[in-house]
Length: 85
Image (cartoon, rainbow, N blue to C red; front, side, top):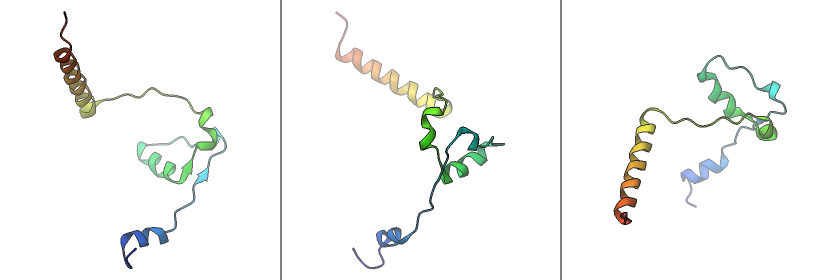
């Protein structure tokens, strides 16, 4: 590795240690979405994953239109490759 390379600088940087959450009560009620990301960057819920509620994913906005477009294109391609008899 060259002296002064960016890889060398990354190795020396100390990472902040995560705070491991041990119960659901330690997760605060966030007042806004802007508070959520910084909290999860410094906390880990890995120890209580089995206690967290599963929420179905929802796709909206621009991502939804791209997803629909891809599905339509894939469906057309299948029909062209395997025409109905």
